[in-house]
Amino acid sequence: MMTFFRHRFAIAALALVVQWCGAQTNDIPGSAAETLQQAPPPRLNKFGLSYRMGMNISVDFKKLGGLQLSDPGPAVGSPYDRTYDNGYNRVDIAGNSGDLTWYWGYQNDLSHQGNTLSLQSESTPATATTGGDADAPQSGLELSYSREFTRGKHWRFCLEGALGYTRISIKDNQTLKYFVDRTSDSFALGSVVPPLPPYAGTFEGPGPLISSSLAPGDRSITRLADAATILGERTVDSDLFTIRLGPCLEFPVSRKFSVSLIGGLTLAVANTEFSFAETVLIADPVYDINLTSGNRSGSGSETEFLLGGYVGANLSYAISERINLVAGAIFQSAGEAVNNTEGKQSILDLGQSVIVSIGATYSF
Image (tube, rainbow, N blue to C red; front, side, top):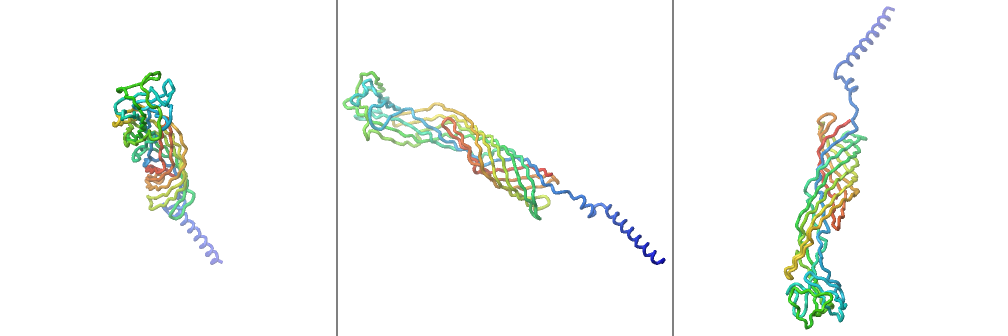
């Protein structure tokens, strides 16, 4: 009987010792139990703020130039009021009876060629093009948010959204050379000896009568290379707002560093202000013709909504448990923002933008 009670007492004492040892173990700092209790939950959300530098953003300026001060009329026929840069052949009070008119004039001896009067009308079309500097970086800011949805041993998958703003300012002040079309019309003088230039016949007359009609072969058109000069300045200022949305895949490469691959859709809103000032000059030394458009200027704004996409990569460095420094680059395509102002055109090209960014993120 005594042996039975001794065994029961030994078992109870052993249970008390085991319980006491377990309690003492839980009180030891850094123990496995404490580590399990204090392990923080994963931080699945992340806010970011970054400075963005956009490159390869360019502007094409189109429909530049354009000058024609005279109207030579159709290539054949009569009667027409025909004006030239060095004279005229117009309908007189008699309605050019017999295809003859005394309402004509010319400016210098270069127009008197044998038995004909040769008059010239010069024009250059508004089709010249130039481009703004695509290498100048454009500065902006971006606020981003990402949410982790799942992870593996060596990767994490999340969705990212970002709101960005970039101020774009591109200016071009190149002097352009462009072609000129010279229209030359020949009018038969008959037996008339032209009065010395400058001569200006009147509508009522009277005066020497010359032909007012053009037959096939009386007109020729010659293209003069670089005879027009386009002076001036063209400027585009744009407030560009972008929204990015897409997946991201993060690969931790060490305790401090990780690499992320990103891509998705871009929605852009471009509010573009286009202004220009230009003067067009035409110089034809063969006929001593010099024309000027005078100063032209204009400005206007347009808003375009653009849709595109992006792909890129980020490198992240953890400076604390919650704060990371991030640097990255993306290739972004968002199309073109077109602005038509007073006959001129600017095209802001966002189709091949490269955006370099540096900033920080906060995880929670």
